[in-house]
Length: 354
Image 1 (cartoon, rainbow, N blue to C red):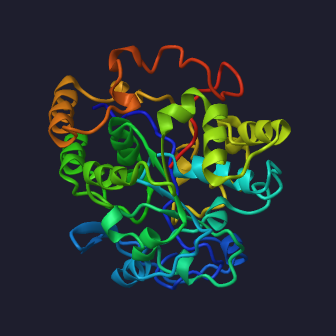
Image 2: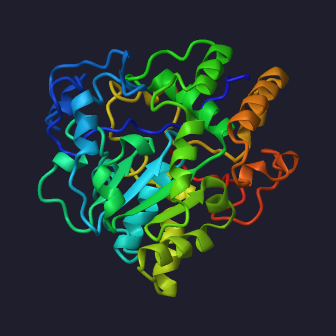
């Protein structure tokens, strides 16, 4: 695949508190000192393995993941679960608006990572005191590492899936600018590692196959990036129904409008411009870029596409059809994406992610 074009990027999962562990961030300018960021740094690009799954050193630890496994879960907790680069931040923005009945003041005053802190990060969501109820939390964990207490609770999980080809392309670019991730190597090397699950959070195939087993449970919603791009309004209504939080027409329109690509790109609390380069180096391009579902076709070579298809067929045999499986030849990234939440015809209808 030709990865010459810059992807938009997702922030690394990191603590929502202003007091970061000394091992996580090192400030590089006086302006950062005002944010009380610590003075040490341990973003080495090295990984550790926890129960067979790779995690970046400095952002996670065996202890922080174990804390999630054994955490107390409240019945009104709301979890956003995704494989990396699958729409996490888009869903956070939508839920932030739904929980405030469409009022955008929260998304304009509080950084997105504080609105939905990460479960598995060092100083993660479960270690933060005095969180408002309901707690909104995010996680990339595979199902076997998730909080055991969840499965005997009424807490809710929204799992967002995305075409793994687009995930691979986005993750490749993200690996080049995220300080906690090791260099992805050549596109061929990275794709081979991705298909083998030798990347952060393990195999995409195992991740989705694990969580899809929850489909049909009252406290589990499976939704895809592609569905949301095609019809954001209906997707928001579906999420509201799942959360038992119906919105009036005006509030619904506010959620759709303020979670659109253009709105998030213009919002400093959501576009990650507040992050230091030592965490996410945006000097090579904007965090949110124009994008469309199916952009992988602009990057994969024929050989890479065929290799991916072989692995996909083998791994996903017996599973239900996903939106990205239907008429893939009709999903050209250069074609009209159809109806969706784009603020204007010049904006791609794909929402910004994670």
